[in-house]
Length: 344
Ligand code: P6P
Image (cartoon, rainbow, N blue to C red):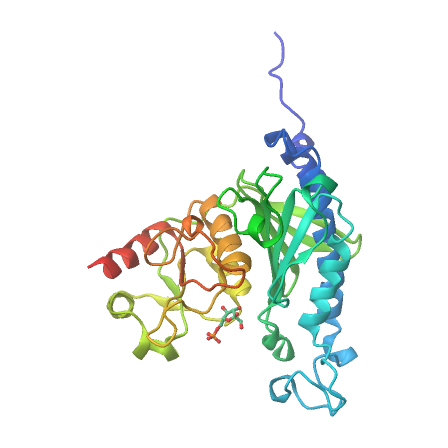
């Protein structure tokens, strides 16, 4: 009698690096032809460099200013009138240095730069734009709270006559991939190319991101909310009503004040993260292109929901590079409940 065929365990538990994972993922994007791996290898190199600088920040004292004043007290311009090289500015330069050489990138949009960095036009091979917040939550570095890099990779419209900011904001520009790197107790990259959400940890001993969790799924509900309740008096009535209900229904509050860290906890544990509009900031605080949109793609790809309070974040047609949107994202039943409170 023939023995039942059993596949050896190692066929399931491969040691997958970020690079080998991306190459395997590209099977789902026949048109990608190596584009993602080329761009993501640039992001991988940049974030490994940033991780090293974040870890050494105190040692290299790049977060204090020339007079040694702590982070929060300086004005960004040192006594010589030169721009203070803060860690987030350094991170910005590192990312541009790593991505600028990727021949399929047309433009870079950074929170640190008022204008996009235009690298090449379509005729010269520029087919993608990369949006990024180089070091979100950087004010937390001097208290060693997790900070992160957020990025989105956008396929630009295949229209030769549009370029630059017009192409970036074009209705046919589509988000092809999104991710973040959390510089926390470990350096974690979370990535989606539209086929689920995968998580990698930087193994410092080999200098490679290693796949540790595939196809992450949020629980549909979880009694955790994450919001800065200092602004409670300025929230929309629907948010205040939901918060009152949560207080009466055994919810736990968790708020780190660093979007990447708060969203990462929401992705892994469930619950809901909110940075809603307030009556003094009707557009909210978080930026659409390089904070809300990448996080919304990740959360939706993990089975959650991500809205502004008046529709899906991914349905917002961008009108300006640095526009802000309200953000409510996480477990879909929690988001739906908040939306019902806002609608009534
Ligand atoms: P607040 C950090 O400055 C940031 O941009 C996000 O990372 C974070 O979610 C938010 O602002 C925190 O803002 O108003 O609660 O300090």
